[in-house]
Image 1 (cartoon, one colour):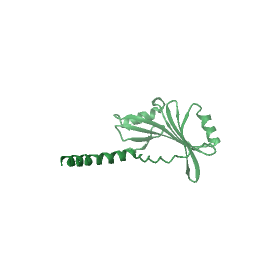
Image 2: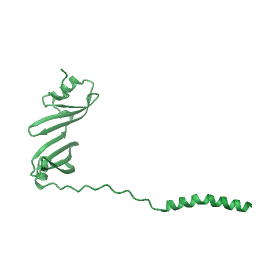
Image 3: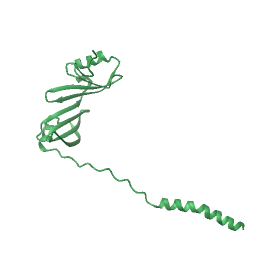
Image 4: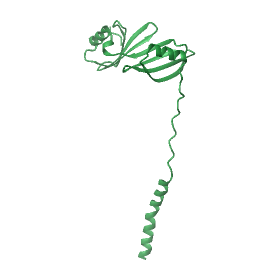
Length: 163
């Protein structure tokens, strides 16, 4: 009788072990890879315009999208440690540009306006935005409203001054 009980206990103990071994032996289903984006090739006119304007810049990414019915090529780059994103038409014409600005290159009027309105805030990031002849500065502040936008002469675009 003891032998039967012992045999039954061993059998019961082996069933989960056998199931576990069988599960471990099955190969796991590999995760599906993310859909790869097709690599965008710059039109020769865009590549030439970019290289002529920024010969020491490194291109990190290129993307293409439609805006207003026309193809726009975005070139994300780094030049001397500062990020620059440009949007080009296929003919090499710059549509707009967003570039990181060093502290020393921020107009004094912009820095003064920020210091006056937000004396305790610190600057996290500075960007110069150029669209045609219009230039603005987008500044990310810590200890302030977040993002502020000013003209080169230090006039506020956002947030507007409280009346």
